[in-house]
Image (cartoon, rainbow, N blue to C red):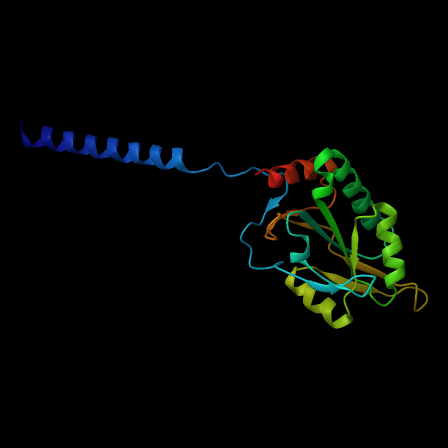
Amino acid sequence: MNFQRQRRLFAGTAVCVALCSLALVTACSPDKPKFNAIDVTGANYAKAFALKEHTGQERKLTDFKGKVVVVFFGYTQCPDVCPTTMTELVEVKRLLGVNGDKLQAVFITVDPARDTAELLNAYVTNFDPSFVALIPTPEQLVEVAKEFKIYYKKVDGKTPTSYTMEHSAGSYIFDGQGQVRLFSRYGSGAQAIAQDIAVLLKP
């Protein structure tokens, strides 16, 4: 066998081995789940919170282990984004059917000055009794907004109490182990969110 032919044979064998190895790796690698929302799995932010609910009890993300948690920031006097999102989550729960009780909606106010414990509790439970509202102190709000990369800003109104709050409109979705997995943009639709949550609930 001449040298050129031997070299071609060796190169062909090397390519074949490489392709077979790649096929083996691909076959052994689990398929990455496909989501409608933005996949933020492994993010080094939105890892945790420790805030009080209307009863004064401190709630942590770990309290909801085993459930898919959707965290949304808003305020009770929000005219559009907040009620739309909450209504959407009610529909998500319905679409999940028997797995609806594995959804935990968590509403964190960006307006602790006006959103009292009683008002917040009445607001979220009006949508669904299982939904939870959390009230950060002004200092905690700064920290949790930074942790979750959430924007909020007070916009003055005609009177000192008629101001509005600009704020981020998306929601974070955590899996049953408390790991942040998705960021769902505002207006994604209940069907898309329910599909994503169904994927996260798969064993």
